[in-house]
Image 1 (cartoon, rainbow, N blue to C red):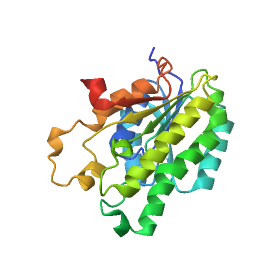
Image 2: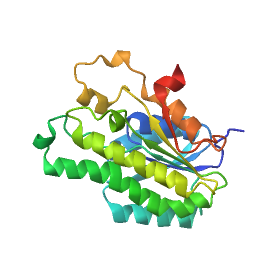
Image 3: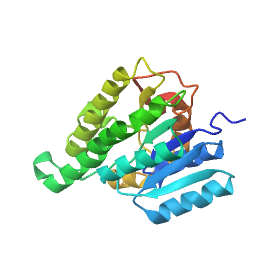
Image 4: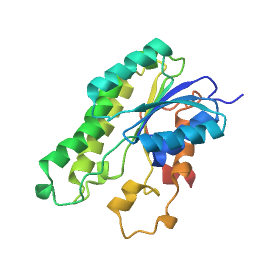
Length: 238
C-alpha cells in the first residue's frame, strides 16, 4: 500500500515543471490529484501521464488570479471529498528581471496577485478542508531571492518574501492542529521559468523537475512531521 493511497491533493501550476512532476508522483502512488493551471493542453498531457501509471486526477483549468474561482473550487472539494490532505502551492509568475523603477506596474501587480494574493486565497478557502484531514500538509514554493534581495529581482523577490512571511504565520496559527505548513526552495531547476530568468545557463547542469518533485512528495506525505520549515532542495539532495 502506498503512503498516498486515497489521499486528496490540490496542486497549482500543474501543467508543467515542478507542479506537473509532483502531481504525477502523487497520483502514481495512489493519491487523487486535483490539478489546476491555465494551460488546458498541459493539463491534458498530465491526465494522460497519470492514467498511464494507473493514477487518477481531476483537471481544473483556471487562472489562479480568479480568486472567486478559488472559493468555488474549495466548495466543490468540500462537496465531493469533504477534506483536503495536501496543498502544493506551486503556481508562480517571474515577471521581468529589471531595475525596480523600470518594472511595469501591471507586471508588478500580476506578480503579487499570483505569488501572494492567490496563495492567501488558497489558505482562506482550503483551511477548513485541511483541518478535516488526519494529516493536512501545505507546501509553498519559494526562492532564495526572498532573503538575498538581489538587484533586478524586485517584484519576484518581494512577492516570495511576502509568501514566506505568510507561510510562517499560517504555520504558527495552525500549530495546535494536525496541519503542517512548510516552504520548499527548489533552487535552479530545469524549467521554463528558470530559462527565462537565466537564458545563458545550460539546463543540463540543473536538476530536473522530477528530482525536486521527490522532495515535494515527501513533504506532502502524512509522515512528514516538520512545520514552519524551509527546505532547500540542494541541501536535501546533498
